Image 1: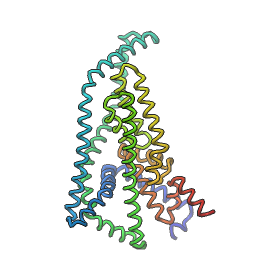
Image 2 (image 1 turned 90 degrees about the vertical axis):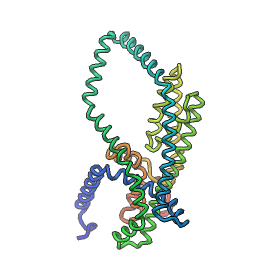
Image 3 (image 1 turned 180 degrees about the vertical axis):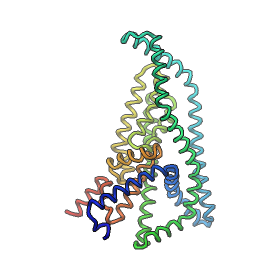
Image 4 (image 1 turned 45 degrees about the vertical axis):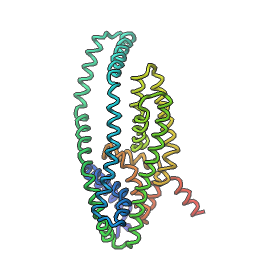
Length: 359
């Protein structure tokens, strides 16, 4: 009996069991899959440059090496610029200490006046709660640090993965021909090209969004007379890599900086209002029109993907959730039996297309 001829309950059981196995495997193999998927994305981005160099008689291994070294040089330059900006913030540390002492004293006075708790008792209770917090959450803190360290360690192997993926790209293509014998090679090439295009378009669109958001953040912070406006503006814009919540997270540092360096809390509120407005603009207009038109994944599917991949792979999962979902949608759209699921992941433009076809 063929799978599609089996009872619905049996097919549903097969699907659920397969999903559980796949998700569990993704969780167990996270140390392998996260850097590998990042490598695939970078390899697809570098492929046009490699092909350009190969057309100019560069050996494949040399063109790949040049492309990787060029990318690493750009990333190193960016990290160096960030490092210089962070070093410039050292001058704020004495002000942070003074502000913390002022806030601490004001908090003690407020608690003593409203709750009639002496400063000595506040100190004793604070130390007790801090000790209990560290004791109860030491495992979580340790796991977070170990996970972050492990992720950074795994990222160092990405250049090697990229080199091998680009070196054996023809070999990988033939592998797909062999595993899908019933499908024509032309159709497989079309699907692979669509996957490459959606990844490149997503990254290019995301880069445009980062540039626009960074410029808006910088201009707003400059008008609010916040120092290091360019650093804070583009730092928050790069957190757009984490959809929906990235800019909100990026606003915390300039808000704290405003509280430390300015005499009035209104500056911090102004920073919060600025980033909230830009967050609304980014979520409702900029990203949907620039990235959404290239990826075509609806907001509900994106949020569910963020939750799933965030729980599976942490920060790496949050960054990879949207491109992986876009690739899954391309694959679903290319397989007849899976097109309804691809439609479910799509945006409203696909609904309009379907209505026109049936009208």
